[in-house]
Length: 338
Image (cartoon, rainbow, N blue to C red):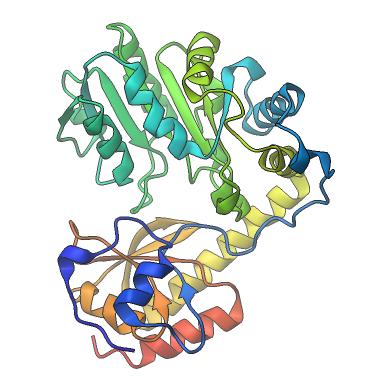
């Protein structure tokens, strides 16, 4: 495989194997894609009634998904739950429902928050901590954060939410990676001026399903449903979501498994001389003096990780899919000169 390094052509998101092949060529052994924070040990797909493929999604199936999500996330009223084609759909729709606002996105974080609020004409305010949200009317925070895993105390988030609500503001909490740390979630404490986003695909390892949820007060939930439109989620996605969210034994076992897998990845990276500076149980963040060069080194060996154009010392590593994946990563790192 061959490559010419261009830091301005670094990917905006993980998982883009087509672009990786343009850059590095096609690996003889296939890709080991560690560029996302998606569980590599996915939920076993249930057998679905053929009707979910043949008919438009029914209102009853969507209601079942709302009820299932409410039970799984500790939400008292299923009417507070909005079903969407991934939390990204809500991230895109929400800025179009607000009048012009000053928006503080606590970063660095998932880049689509800044992009979508900016594209909708809002004013973005630089913000690195909750203590610097100043006079923002909308505050967006990811908890735990992507890519560094920074955690925010739910009590502090509620204080921010109450301050915003007193002046008609909004707190958006992206909990895409909160399944492994449910104690961080505000989903069961939504109130006026709070919207919580949840992703199904990351923890359940089914990102291609495109399923996510927004949790907020029922009136705002109804507005979001109108904005997303009818049949916004496919019938198969709803059916799989209902089954997965109800499978508490699988959820509990997966939390334990992912914690062990993350610890194993930490050990592998540390023994390779890399400094693990954060992450969640679905990904780890490394600080390396020559991170972009390491990105190239791994890419040329068919291993895709996530670089960051704005943070040239950072690389994010998703979990390898078991012993074989870890060994392939270990072998590639053993030939890295640092």
